[in-house]
Every structure is written in structure tokens, then in C-alpha cells.
Length: 104
Image 1 (cartoon, rainbow, N blue to C red):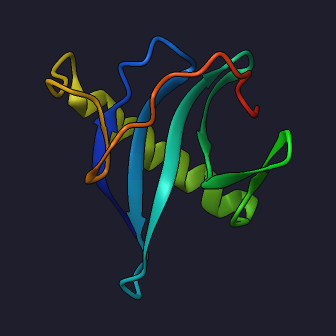
Image 2 (spheres, one colour):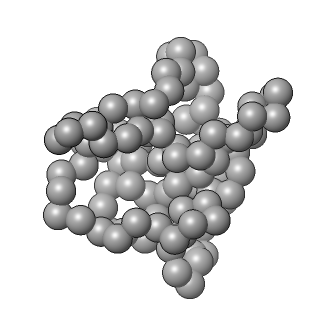
């Protein structure tokens, strides 16, 4: 697997970056996040809002998720202080900030 199109979030929230993941089979999954949580940095999987809650749309086994976190942190650190002129989410504009609490 490999990380594609990681973009700094620049939102002033716990979300630090967004990225796509390509599996060894060539499947591209959009909507991953690098998140700075109260217990450390983690990878948030794609999710959708259902009612008032956010639900993960995929499940990743713990060993694979740990490997993904290591890859994501390496890629994120390589972004350095360089950031895009306008934050983006893949090839779509990043959603506007909201006062809603984060789902994690």
C-alpha cells in the first residue's frame, strides 16, 4: 500500500492532514486523516455522518493500522512547513470549518 496526495489541513483543528491510500491491488480509498488526539497522533479512517454521530466506513486490522500510521507520519513529516496556498482534500476543496465537535 502507499499514501497518495497527502495535503496539510491548515484548519487550526486536531486534523493535521488528509490523504488517499492505494492498496497493492490498485484500489484507492479517499478520506484518511492524520489527527493529533489527546492521547497522541493517529490515523482517522474515512467516515460519514449518520444522524449526530460519525461512523467509520471501513475497518482496518490493528497491525495494518499501526503500519499505516507509521507511513502517514513519515509522509506528514516530509511535508515540512510547506503548505498549499489553499487547503484541499484530494482533488476537491476542503469542507468549510464548522462549530460541530470532532467525531473522535
